[in-house]
Length: 618
Image (cartoon, rainbow, N blue to C red; front, side, top):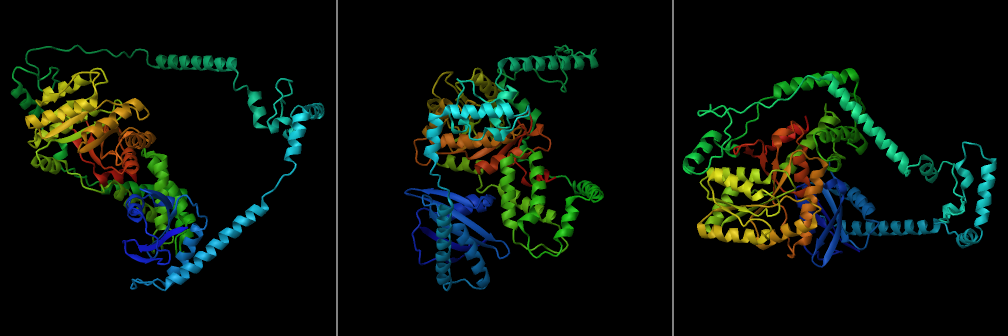
């Protein structure tokens, strides 16, 4: 049974709902659809599952891009209504004929809708009956199975006769009706056919499971790698990397690295040296995009010249699309394929790039092409808008403001850093601490990585360099209890912020993910930051989705706490392959709050959305 059908504008104005249906929806499926799909460029799927306490709905929708209308049908997920797509198409066609931008009420559309609903239901019923009528009924199945079970020799004779009359090449059709096709394998009688064109025969002929051949291939492969290494060594045999001796003199120059740990005897002077050497954090510096438009325009003109020489599909498409009133999906496919390939070369996950292109196609299909414009430029402009919309945070997270608000309430602001192994959680935690110190905020570190050897010592070194307190209990302790005691200690000593360092863990490690979920549930932090590398591509989707899934599955709370923001590390090592930022934001919905771009405490900055979008589409 159809629960509801709505028609509203892109601006959110509801034009019509069916009063005859009149079913009260549980939860807020339409609001969730707008927030999670339409505003987040996930509208290409045209289907969304909504779960609410006591109800689970499926929402399907279609757009009329020229008029800026959205048509949404809602029904119980368990029903699997087959006529909904057909009904939406008919409603879209009929409503577009009577639509007037000045009208806000369409009560006369109720009767039209009910008639369309009856037509769609009857059409779906007829199709179902025709499929059942055309379904072949094989009454001889039992007889054939009886022949197979009682007459295996018959199959063997067919095989022998086929083998005697066949040539060396064999014929796959000769083995039709063989007992092997019905699952009766005669391996014990030696009757397995050794020739033919079937997949089973190919596997047995090639010897894919022959261990001896596999070992030979491995030995050959090892020889090839050895020869490759030898060739490489012959090319440059004289080059040797020699380590330079370190000069330990009494007065080293400022340009040299400081190999000493700025510890202890005069700690205040040491922290002053650190601040003087490293200066102001990049978080507080406004990143100014250089005026590279001239150089980029020159590059674009060069590319355009090359394209015209090669007679690329851009120019041919412009010629073929000229004079068309509305864009069709077939017109957009080449341009979107080029955009997908471009995004994937920038390290965007393939799944994300494909969904983005589907969403852009859904937003452009049916629109009129402006005069003297190409489909490629129209698609690129739509993709640029979509990327800006995705990367721009849905809600503002101002840590400094939230810290002062928590301070007024007399409690510390707690940030938990989570992520996989080796991404730089402890280092970037220290960068965040350095940034907060510059804003006169009292910071305390909590060493809750009680799993990895050396983790406590590493955090202790950062705390010593920054001259901030650290709460630690050593190793093999429950990190949830350590974090809880650290927060209590921060309340006693007047610390404004507690930065909780956790152990790195793979997203498939169930015991460690269960421990992390417990830590977040017990301590209820103000911010959960996922620390991820900018180097990852497709793996970013797997990491973030599984982290959120495990945190939800292992949490005893009905409203589990998920990832609030992303800290992207090693951003200075990827050149223009910035796609991991897009993949992480798209899959989690959480904004990129910090970007690590170096090894010093100042190398932490904000994500520049315009710069990222320009790089992705360059």
